[in-house]
Image 1 (cartoon, one colour):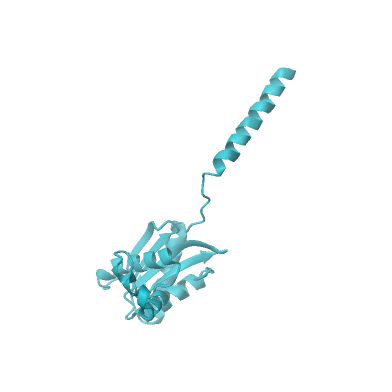
Image 2: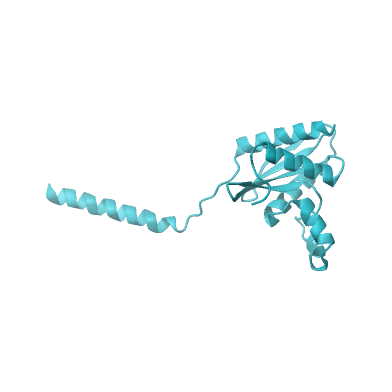
Length: 166
């Protein structure tokens, strides 16, 4: 009985130590989920309605995976891809695409950022932060101007209790 108990304790300790060792190779990730993407898209639509606009929306998780595309009726089809690229730009740079656009215009060495195929230096993309961690991004396009798209995205994110900067 004593030997069995001793073997159980040793086995348990070895299993625990193995789990601890392997944990150092796994990244814990906080990321938007589908429910969050749906709420963000809904809120962006509501913010666009306040301006009498209809928009396309893209939501990405923290790894850059597209969780949602949503195109409102009568919004040009190019806006769907534009919203995704704005979301990707803001996620990748951890900066609102509108701010990045303004910064790049005023900085000679940053002007070539627009030559990177996935980046889109137009207003409407914003990173989404929760508790100091980047959890995803929102891209909005079709609101009549980059500034409108930017404001729609910011307000949608903030209305749901997220932040747009760390």
